[in-house]
Amino acid sequence: MAYSLGQFRLQAAKSLEFERFQHTIGVEVLACDLAKKYQINAEAASLAALTHDMAKAYSIQEQIEKAKEWNLIHYPEDLQCPQVIHGRVAAYMLQNEYGINDQDILNAVANHTLGRPGMSPLEMLIYSADLTEPSRCFHGVDKLREKLYDDLKEGTLACVEHTINYLTQSAKVIHPLTLLTYESLKKNEND
Image (cartoon, rainbow, N blue to C red):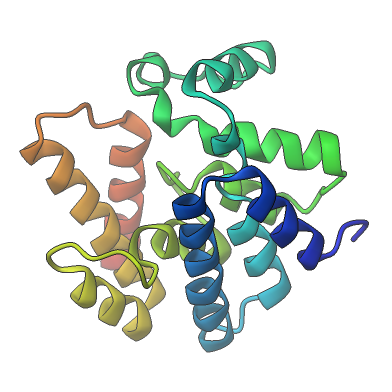
């Protein structure tokens, strides 16, 4: 790896707002802990966690412009709720600006907001750690963490269900990729 984890940690500290940086470190801590439990590469988990929100250093408008320029808009909902595209933008930056070519890391970063059908263990880990890292405090977060420590797939399914319920109760758009992720995890649970 041309860049060290320390360099990515320092870059996150410099480029992200303080709360976003704290969140990023929280995601890294939880992701590394879960990686050890599930025998997932801890360095890959750290890298994905440290970079998952790197595009948040840009305004939403800048993220949209970059996503359009780099052909990262795949659904009409990407523009209806553009806060979901920063993962794809970050993954593109990782690959094209930093030379990170590990597809599992790139997928974990790209899909941490919406998920995708057939997620790898690293993708599930980053998706779930983003929602449940230690500074998150919403009703039910402790139960989600417990489920993640009991079983990564079932815990991730619970995280996706939580997100769908939250969006439904808030009368917000549910991205089709999140619904496909839910269906995929639910099908795997029943297989």
